[in-house]
Image (cartoon, rainbow, N blue to C red; front, top):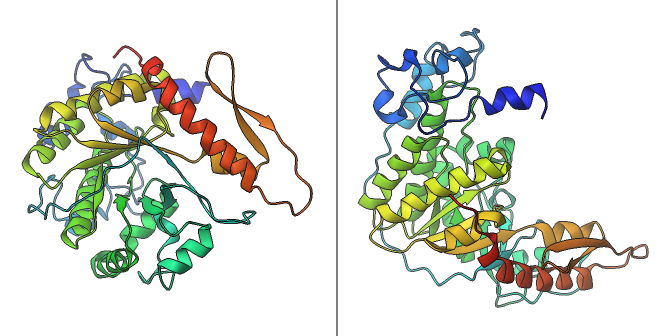
Length: 364
């Protein structure tokens, strides 16, 4: 582990660690929960950049702070209740596509995921004329249902917020017109080396994005991004008070990829199931190691981009003697489509996920 990685790890919220002294008088302690880390940090403001004029982070020392708080109307996780929308049962395994390049035939799968950010431009207008043009672009069968995943790099995720309210409403209307089965809300980032106000602002944006989606009649999964116990307690309170939340989403592809951290976040997620009077659906990106643990508490749907990405790089999935998925090189000739590779990758990956879920539980 590099020095930078060790420093980053020291900023992870650690249950049971003493609260930093600088948090005691903080006005946001109630919704933040206070900083509990292994390092010797006085407060989260130790992460302040010290450049208030140019700083773009949601930090009370930044000159833009008041404007950033005003744009989300405070930091509380509260909205009016939305409509309870009908949602079809989702399968345990959902392949993800990014485009239809190098494919010759339509792909025979009941449901796929596609990045949300492929579907709108900077004005909120749809990039596709109708559902048929979507099916042609991604080589989808007529019966294939579509989930749009809001998990992406920050530069992509922020495009949704930049549409502003009217632009987002326009974009949502277009998604409904296309008959999109579900959208997972954008995963606005919570980052350990920033003041906590930035996290609280991101969480507020997530809940506003979710409320806009369901209020406009678009089925959606609430992305419960968090990095401390209090974050998940707040999500639990929101879910308990909002029966329209039937599905949540989470990703284990970035800061939570560390196995120890993955287990901690899975434990926090499991707590959300106890906050709800109903069994929730959970759409996962990454986190196959804890999928078995989470399946005890949720109806898990695992969104997997590996079959598509590996097919594009001419690799095919195989199961080894332990039932784990591996990738073998499978070179193709120039211009040869990858339909067979993709089909095999999806077939093997479904078997891998189904057979390994019971074995994949890690002790929380």
